[in-house]
Image (cartoon, rainbow, N blue to C red):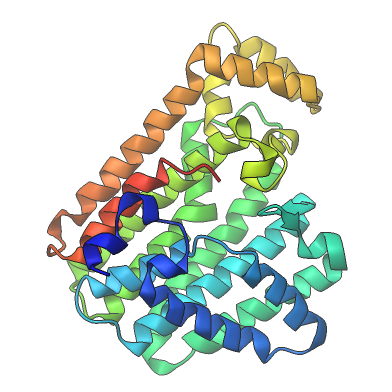
Length: 330
């Protein structure tokens, strides 16, 4: 199979078989999980087998391969990136009291919060076991920044539940903390381990950050206009948890629907009928389209940041990935 065939748009984000390099990541993830004991092995294994797009290791691998062939350090960093992501998902499910993820029961819903939190901690420990080797210490600083940002983002989101004072500036700061900085760390790590120049590493950081913005905005849109079956979790969960996402911020500022939405936010209770009404208002006001446009602008900014990166099939793959962020359905 040629590089061009591997990177056809319909193949992006569809699993490791479309990206041979990700098979090495899967092997190492399985090796790490299989050496765990008892319940932790079981809980980690369930999450690993539930799938996932492997966006973070893919960004790490291909950011590095823009500058040279795949090397063992890039591969190890990509495994650490996915372990950090898996750990954060488990902790997020505990915080959000989520019963399902990717259409399957969450660790906390099956084994309880205590086991789930310890499972997440175990995965974080395994990630830092990888990153603590001397040649990966610089990458570790990138990932530490990302984890600190994720924690701050969760704390701020909890503090701001059902807050009508949240505007676009606060929203973008929050999604940088929750999503963008980790994707930026993945891109930086891959480039740094391939001996890219300082300017090239910074451009890939900008790429990852803006991909993170687009990814999270798209996620927030899907939370409002997808189905539970396709999304793999309850629709409208963000709104019911009081999290003001970009489409809702736009609707809050709408002269026709703003006061009505404010009353719902103040009540801190969203019924299924209320959720349907909000979706209709988002559609008729154009606020969902406005959010789509914001995500598209982030993708364009991400793609522009790659202008200084030498042309290669791997840069092309990153550009294609940027476009397909907007086409996600789950």
